[in-house]
Amino acid sequence: MKLCAILTLSVTMALSASVHAAKAPGSGPNPFSDCGIGAALFSENKVLAVTSNIIWDIGTTAVTSATASPETCSGKNVDAAAFILNSYDSIIEDTARGEGEHLSALMNILEVAPANQAQIINDVRAQMSLHIADESYTAADKREKSELYYFTVISAVTSA
Image (tube, rainbow, N blue to C red; front, top):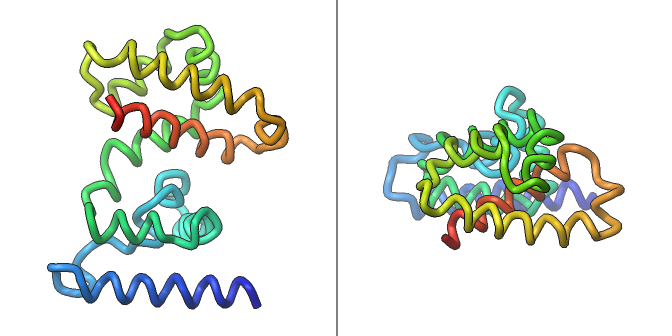
């Protein structure tokens, strides 16, 4: 019953967002399968992308991305999320050290200016040390840890 309500709310939000969009309906990305963290983590599987977006925040982030800035539904943010998921163990080790091949690659994927990289890495290290100390981190699976890392990095990059 709860899932049905979530799905209904998500579809309603998607439809209402498309009414306000400047483009013709259907011309932009599908917010539930092409945007948000679901698309970033499951770009090859639309069902998992939709499911993840709905579970994460009822799809609001994905819908907002699709309507306010459809360019975020592809490109470097999606590439960064996929890279983080595929190399999580290595990238978390690099983050703990404050340097490394995977961390450098991530900065390059996100097109972070070399002058800003040290500050962003320090911010990510500080935030991740707090997350790792939390009991819920230990219980999280690789996908959940990757999502947490992704949002931490994106927050640091956009704050720089």
